[in-house]
Length: 193
Image (cartoon, rainbow, N blue to C red):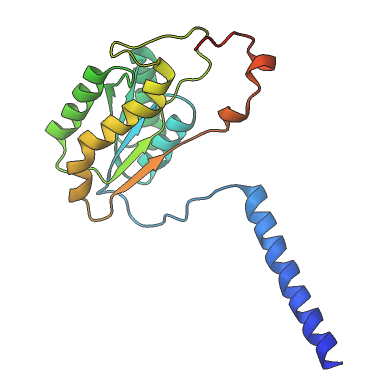
């Protein structure tokens, strides 16, 4: 009888843990950050639209100073105005950043270095997907590889000295499930490599 009670008890615990994990899985990720972030300085690539814009919004609401880098000047300036109004945080800034261009990454990093003594959070978010034709950047690299990988790696290395100064530096690399998309079905093209 005692053995059956133990089995039932363990089964109950297993079911409870399983349900808790399922709930967490289906409700998605969450941020338990509740500390004051008014002194933090964050850099977000691709901060003018999508996940990047939402990230800037949430960081700015927490009181961070946020520097967003993106290619599209018009969209970025519009997003900057909206974000400042929505969050009531005037410490959101924009600097042009084309991750496919080594010179642009260097200019962006210099902008950050000239204005800030440290960076607490670097969020590598910007990306390109489904470029219709194989296109090379000025350095001879395929553009999606340059933007999605090389540009972020180079930016991180240039900002590394400012990140090391922070008490709690964080580097967050955002990714997607784009690798699971069936390109032939959703985006017919030929891949000539």
